[in-house]
Length: 168
Image 1 (cartoon, rainbow, N blue to C red):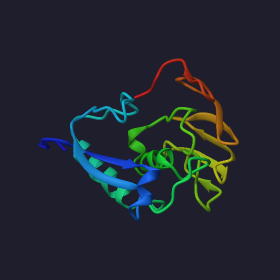
Image 2: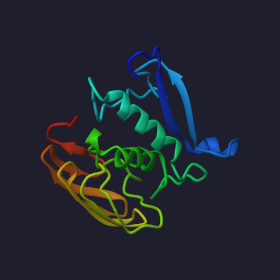
Image 3: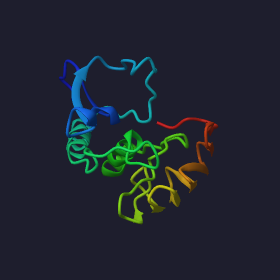
Image 4: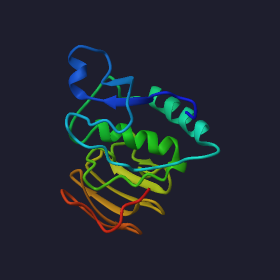
C-alpha cells in the first residue's frame, strides 16, 4: 500500500506441508528479493489512484486460496495455480502468465472458469487438457499441462515460454 515500509509477500511452497497445515505463507520482505536465487519476474505493474484497493483485493484473494492444504507439482494445485487464482480474482491486473507456468490451468473440480488472467473463458480437465481464450491470454491449448498459444504479446511454447514482447 501507498504508505507501507515493506512489501507483503504471499508464497505457496509444497514442502511447507511437511510441517504446516498450509503450503501458503504470508510474510514481509524487501521488494524484488530473490527467491532461492532466482530473480523475480514482473507480470503486472499498477500504480496510482485505486492501487490500494487492488492490493486489498489481492490480499483477500490470497487468504481465500482454497488449495492451501494440498500441493502437487503437476498438474496442480501448485504455486502457479495460486498466482492464477489471484489473477482471476483481480482481473484488472491483466496478468498473462507464461506457457511455462504449469499449474495455472488447474481449476480444481470445475471444468469451466475464467482464463488464468481473469478475463475470457477456460475449459480445463484437471489442468491436464484444455483451452483458454481471452483478450489478455490470447488463445492457449493445454495438453498434459504444456501450453501452446498465441496472444498480442507473441507465441507461447512449452519449456520456452513466450517468443515476442512481454506484457505488464
